[in-house]
Amino acid sequence: MQHSIFTGHHRLDLMTLTRPAFSALVSALATTAMVLALGTASTRASAASYAVTFEGPTELCALAGQHSELARFQSQDDVSSNELSRLMNEAPAQLAKLFATEGYFNPVIRVERLASIAGSVPQLRVVIEAGPQTHIYAVELTPAGAIMQVVDESSGNRIERVAEQWALS
Image 1 (cartoon, rainbow, N blue to C red):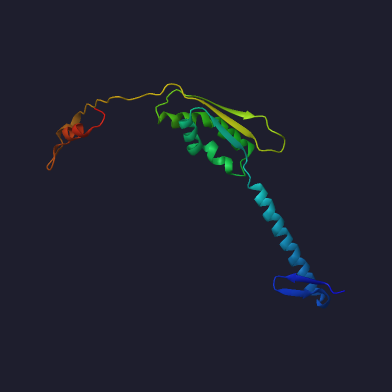
Image 2: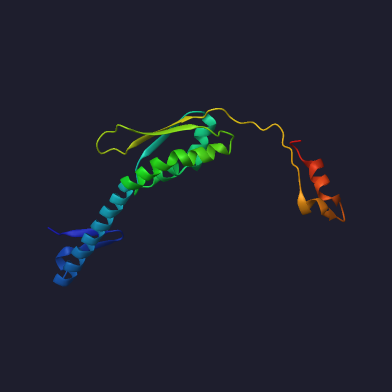
C-alpha cells in the first residue's frame, strides 16, 4: 500500500520521506491546521456583541440607528460588558442631544436590556418618546457694535444685505 498526500499539483509519497522531511511535513500540517482553526474561530467571533432595536417615531429611530454609539458598536465582536454598560448609560443623553438638532428638546429615552437565552448576544431596546417638536417660524436679529459700521465697497452696508437675503424673516 502506498501512502501519499495530494497537495494541489503535487503528490507526496510518504514512504520516500526521510525522518527530518517527515517531521517538517507534520509540523507544516499542524501549523496549517492551527491557522485554519484560528480563522474559523475569528470568523465565528465576528458576530455582534449585542443587538439593539429602536422603538418610537420613525424619523428619530432612523437618526439613532445612523448616529448613536450604541448602534455603531453593535457590529463589533469585542464589546465588553463594562463597555456595553457605559454605552447603555450614555445613550439617553447622547440621543437627547441628537434629537435636539431636529427640534425635540424634551424626549424621554429608555434603554432596556431584554431577557436573552444563555449563550446568545444581549438584546437591547431603546424606547423613544419624542415629546413636542419645536418649530421656528421667525427670527429677529438685532446687530449691535462695530458690525454696524462695516461697509463693503462693492455691495454697501453688510447688515442691510444680510437682512435682505435672510430667509426666516
